[in-house]
Image (tube, rainbow, N blue to C red; front, top):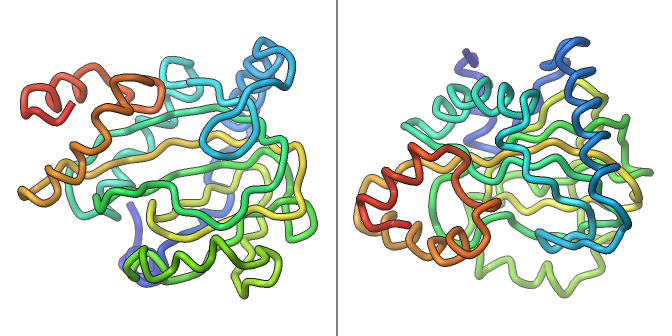
Length: 230
């Protein structure tokens, strides 16, 4: 379980770094699984998520599935309520990712990510704009028009085994990088009021059309269908 200081850090700045969260055995199993998936994906002609790369659905792969279950309690602690996992992927990014957020609708959500290379500002480390998850997204649209390299930011240097957790509405980027591997999953809070239900419902068509970007577990899909959200 997280300390109160860690929870406050996440809620204030929008991200949290868990150094060495994956032990050597877990990390080795994840790397072996991800590398095999990348080889099976074939030539570099795929694109997804707005950033060029191979995005391999991983919710039913053993190493990934175990991590999805492991980090759910952490996600629920940070979000302050029951949550469900979405879009578990094993990824090979091919290029930079400019400033963006991961989720448009105003629903409480976060991403858990583990990079499998040692990364810093020179080779594609995740960069964040602390606190931007608390600002209305429309007020930050100018970030799309700025030179991404000129935006003041915080660079999260990481090593294999570290885990980065960040809010789905936190502006982030990855610059100067080429090939880099990542495992990630998102967690969405179950809606508590009509506004949240309306916002979450906006994702329903996308999740139905591309289920690999939707809820990982059948039990969560069933629950969302019964409430008219999927």
